[in-house]
Image (cartoon, rainbow, N blue to C red; front, side):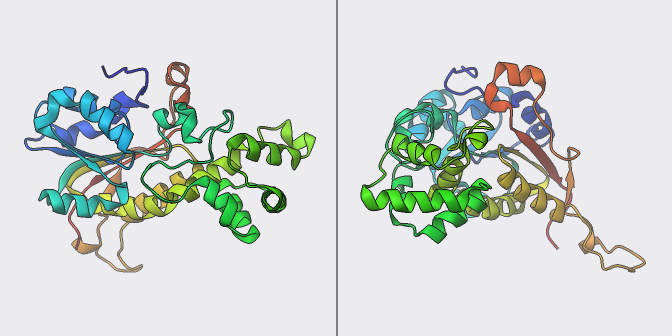
Length: 317
């Protein structure tokens, strides 16, 4: 069932290879911080018969489907409805001090992209929703309706890296004064009309704006900023973390945090590096690993992935 068409796990074998040394130990615990439809989780539970898995996801529908999928392993799993920056609280509630491994598969899930009614895809008309957690209050429609022009410009710049942010923000404010923008088709129409023909030939005008709205609605970057350090802190010595990121903004955060925790903190000029100054982690891959051409051919959603991984060398000073 690992190859469930709803969820083809990205870089599955590489994730297993990197995490295996930590998960082969007796009593190993793995946090799947972005459970989704459970493709990675099921493979790990099959491969490591003594593994206990803690699965987190903010999407209640995905959790329900994955609970069915992982039912044969029910005695070895804890599935929790939460966002991944709450790792410390979840572990405290479960009475777990440290874990052996953590896996993050960031970004929007396959199921969320495939369900047009969720509003993530600009190519399909749907309500402007974009919530990963259907119980959350903020939607893309509210952002479009309630944020002022400066706020819209900021999120399009910061979260979409959109050069036409001022133009798009201005046109959206003008259009919503006439009638509310409630669907993806209505928003796409505004964006296309505001985009010079030469720019349109370089790619769909809505791509970066939709990314920015999704990140804002779900506070994705804020969550990643908190979650990666918390995940590192949860690892036992010898524990490992693997992070799959699909856009540069998330990957930059992951890169920065892992680099900082993998460097010596010894002051310059100190003749001897004291134990408390030694790096807490070591990087397991050079830079960011990309998917192979074969993997991209099998699974188009692997195309933009950036994989980073690290191992804990010592406890905190």
